Length: 257
Ligand SMILES: C[S@@+](CC[C@H](N)C(=O)[O-])C[C@H]1O[C@@H](n2cnc3c(N)ncnc32)[C@H](O)[C@@H]1O
Image (cartoon, rainbow, N blue to C red):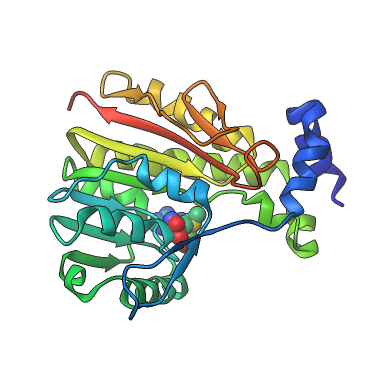
């Protein structure tokens, strides 16, 4: 295994690392989302379901899923809207958008389709072009996805400290855009499936400095059994959460324009 990878994560997670690494190789136990007998099922990790539910979407709201493909969390947001309000499912990748479109069409009841729009913008542009427009934003950011990296010798070889630092910069600009696109009183959830400390609380810490008077951190409770409270959110890791995760999420409210 890539020794830089092992050094970095074993330093960060200390005594916990061997069991965490072992847990990352084990099978996941997803939950089934099925909205009617005639529609397809979608299987989603319970920690991902939790992150989407944290957004507390209510019927009638204007909701943005900024990085939506392949669409597992969009399904949760759509089910909470139940056909009332609007849901913009955005993803920059054309290939992944095709999958997203299929997932939405084949899994959700037809009556909910009219309020859903799929777009392909760079998420970091929403703050500029859609200032103050959304009641709820889910930013499930592109991240290191270490659970997948360790399953692939090619991706493991490509792992580097610089890569996780680069991702954290990208995540910071997506998060700044999400804050700016949020309406006053609106709420956003920032989530990743990363283990890297650069991509979780550190990204939230930076935005709290950058958009100081505009946002506040909201409490997330109750959480999944075995999850860790962090400085700004929760981290659900498979060694303590019966195989669920990794998922980090933090919840922010827009308190001033
Ligand atoms: C973690 S995945 C999202 C998973 C999805 N939320 C779900 O639950 O199925 C991150 C997604 O972000 C997309 N992405 C990466 N950079 C982006 C950007 N600048 N703007 C919009 N989407 C982006 C990727 O194509 C990828 O599909």
